[in-house]
Length: 339
Image 1 (cartoon, rainbow, N blue to C red):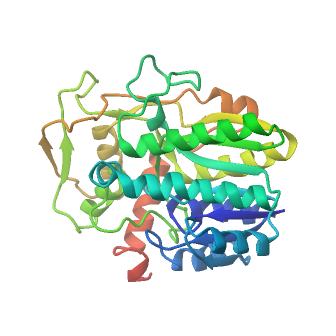
Image 2 (image 1 turned 60 degrees about the horizontal axis):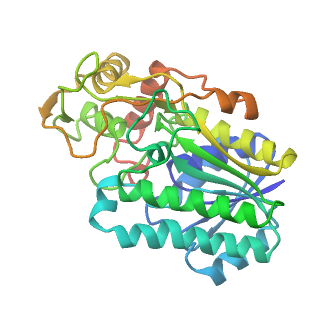
């Protein structure tokens, strides 16, 4: 089976390529490398001992996209390509709608023209908005609170409309919670450009000495230690969920939204202390005021993923921190620094 992976050189995409190749599938990656490194794909080949095909291009370029998709011979698509920084999305919303929504529309148009109707979409728990109940189930009302989340919700709605118009489509919408960790080899991991937007890579950069301290935004939330609580999921578990989703779509038509989370909430300070234990390094923190729009706590109900996909998270916080630390130590400056 050939899988066409948009954004396959990115953090989650590269880990998913490893799992796809290890599952015996063939992979073509389509990526513009705007927030990723081609080196990640070379390391995917090193980890798996297998080859993959890579095409540089932008999903908004319908002509290039259609040609790459046709040339790949793919029967299924996994769509990761998208901008993902919440703060940046608030500053430049049109860029986010152009890339995330218009880009996905170009992809769906190309798929329709080539009669490829099987897609796994990378969505987000941000589509749930302020919790009306916890844990989030897939039946929770949808109401994103930031531009990034709105673009994910817009694409979800597009996919549901496409399916209503043509029930031969096979669509899986995977709602991620908080991906962290790295491949246990230390060869691939999260390599943010500039200041990290996510907690774990920031903590790792403090531990390795690239940054002086971690800013903790708010310690007066109604949580056990006052800091925000999130559902962290190991990126290798998340990647395995995509393989399960592809296999599910081979057997089932429909349009299903599915949570991929561990189903357990951990606070910011829980993660900091776990990382200090895993790395043996101190992670100094500086507490600041709450950030506008941050939620106090949320986590997933992952039971639908278990029931439909036969998937559940297997790796806990210790593995998340140990694997991140191995990646950070081996690649203190990311892919550009080599190993």
